Length: 601
Image (cartoon, rainbow, N blue to C red; front, side):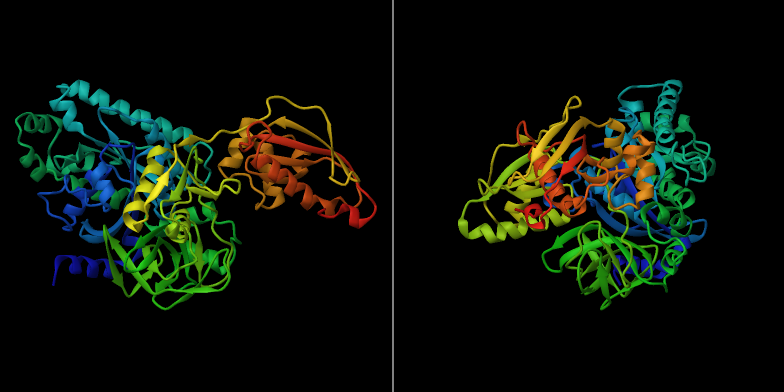
């Protein structure tokens, strides 16, 4: 029996015991060493050779990732680790660090309960470190810290023990300051989530040279920083790796300090699901009940040339099995599961079933997109996964040969399904396909994949920056007339406070919320009470307030008013760019008595 088969069997055995499962993501600024660290963990679990770990970059499964030397797609792997005589199942997601692929990090955080944040000892906490921490804490995911590339402090910067300690402590202090600032308003976090060396929630080491230490490991092996510096300076890195292997230190930390699904789900479910907290469904999710109704949250869609679309995500309750017919939120009818499996890096291993508390990959959910809720009963879907950033760069894409056009349209639809941070639209005036993303690299990778993987030769235009329009001061009251001159509307517009715009962007305020909750959220963001009670519509980051009093027939016409407003906001008056951060007030309206004169015409 092959080693891989053995690992899969061991994973299957451990899946049914949620107390011994850890779902974790590795996240960091670009090039701080996440994928190199993942290699060490895979080698420690016996999945790849110790000799090539650190250089193999096994979690960068796509050709373009290996070529560019960066992670582009989040990759999943399940492995086992023995801690305190008990075997644990660890489902790990290696996430990208480049800012253009931040959407993958946000989606990965929905599936996990713990985030191992990696920071380069020389560079310290960087902008993207702050972003990944924010993404983790917004999803209620507990952080731990690994300070990588400590070897550089010894060999390159030639620092002494005192300097080195001061530098490492300042990195920890910076990270804790970020965590404190973000966790201030989070009432559902029971304990202090800052990291500390004494508690064992901070590790140090070098992923490239495969050694690592933490306070518990130093106590266990009797090694201190003095020994490490001696061995590192005398080039005895192999001995260092043998005496204190990185994978043991990190995986022990994961097993000890990250919550298992039984501890995490009661806290996380109310945060990401707005359904009835007293229902059987809520109870099943909070108890991680493998016999309950199936609830599966899709966090990632990928294409496999043989198996077709693979949906990966977290099973919150119930057990996924082949042949089940499940509802996908927002679509009619049911989808039938064709196979259930676990990811082992680039390979997907099929298993009989995957119970609650695990990360599973499923084929057959053709209607699912990243962010769908899949369940055996009709239910309130999970909160949508809010991406902090929005598209900033747009390119036009056209097929070189007209025959490829249908295939290109299909591929672009698939791209939008796999990556919600990409926006695809067809410009009706020019017939161009416009593709908008987080940055030039993001679009370059997408277009390269359309060429290489789908074999469609495409021509792309120059990238253009997407601008936004916004009023700078309050306007006077303006009279607007309907095309038939029989209906008049009196409107003002003013810029909205940035706090309210932020609340809309972070998903804290939306039209899907119960009215009372929305009102409270707007007042918290600084809107006055009377205004917050009259919100009629929120479009992008713009709000329409209905300040009219007792106007007959307005409710019939309101839908048409909103349609007109949305159209005007998508193509702003200055440069036909989208309008943002504006507050519109409808003060008064004069409508014709006859229904026919108030209609869509």
